[in-house]
Image (cartoon, rainbow, N blue to C red):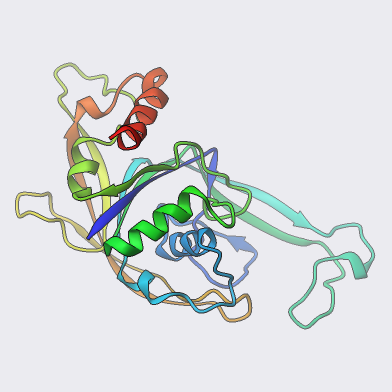
Length: 256
């Protein structure tokens, strides 16, 4: 088993929790498994109507919440002021005839570091695809492009150690005197690895993808364990040095 480390950052992200198109397009406060599997499938050139490879079932995800971001809402219209034939299409093959109005929720200025763990061969193939994707990756919606560096590491043996002690933290150094740690939220698909770790809250979310078909999307439940854990303050730093520290961390693998 090995892992890939991804950094999900950008001006906007949106991780929808509902499979149906509704007037309010919400966002989860963290990347969903469905969206991440969709990102992996797109990188490997797997279309929405194709069967999802079984190897995605075995992937384990750990999310470190560097910055939770701020929720913003966009009043969004499609097709207003046009003849009916040029308005938004319906599933029945007609057109809506009027503007489609939605309120779309986004996370602004959020940053997540995700460890994707699985069998070595699957991780090698996926890492290659993420570095040279068939379809460009996006953070939940096509309008949400990721910042660089996107792939921090394509192969790590111990993702827990990397997340807790090595990956630079995308937030300023705490201002209080004598601070040596930074409290950071983690979301895991398995209970925290050691008895000495903080107590984890249990969340049930409906985001395991069964089908991405445009007319038959479906999901099932998974369990998450949310905890807040102290990380070394040295992972944080002045904001003006963050990009250099991230690039240095990502390039360490390339020069090894």
